Length: 398
Image (cartoon, rainbow, N blue to C red; front, top):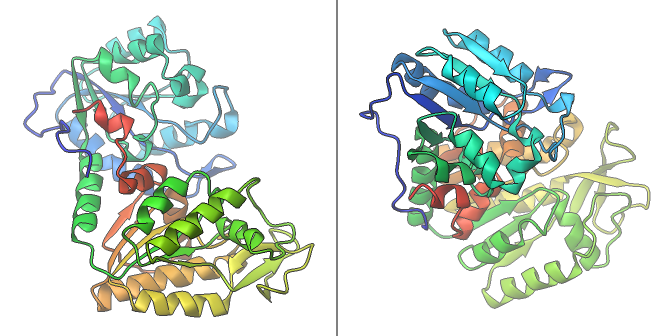
């Protein structure tokens, strides 16, 4: 894999009385100021507690959603701050101002073991632009920078990439290290047949990884709204379902590459549809979708096809739900796949790796007791790493 030579945080590092700039991923689903899934926060807590115990001062940086450089109260980290305050036995502060001398002063006032969480870093346009002066201001806040957000490490942004230039010492954190070790081990030791299940909506964001996976996978199963683009290509009706404009060339390229590498591309043959997102499910086969239908999940015939493929696989990689899991009527496909992959992991020694925030949320929402070889909270970074790309947030830590 491409990320050897990364400098990792060591438990032996002297950090007492040091100010740590810690980039984490607290990008959790929040509805009406209530956190819906605590997975990413829970994974962050052990390292935070370790830093508190070692008497360092912690400046916590994260994003939430995609506010595109503007303040948006629905994307505030306030609910996350309240939760951290409950769970951490230390003084925890929340800063909602600009990244400037005022923030620098507040950071300098921190005592050993205290935490200051900065409001959603993507409220600042300079973050996504990887703006140099903004990066410098972040770097000047502390003594040591630690990136423990693998899920963001494919982004060339100020708090992930630009900041490293302006700190004396920069390291990858323990969560990031664990992610890379697990994925590296699985990719290195994967056994054929290999099946990749790819969901989500935008095919353009995943074409490169699909093209790369085609070279090593035996089957690529396309689910979720992404499958709609393949239906359009094959001249099937998709009604009012989500689709991506101008996907024809992309789909054609994928199918041609799959044929040349003898990789089977599997698309759904039946679906659960409704007239709206909150409605009940109607089963339709691939030829009977009506013009006012919305495809919201895969159907029973498709599940049997995928079940057989999983049974004949020794390695399964899955990214992206199979349907609109937020409505339990359309969580059937996602829950079935999760249960099936888990059962085979336990009973048949299937090597299973799952990635993506939506995938994790869907699994947690299901309430099922499941077991996988590795569960990654990363989505885009997970896919790009599998693709073999150098991730900007990791390259700077070499």
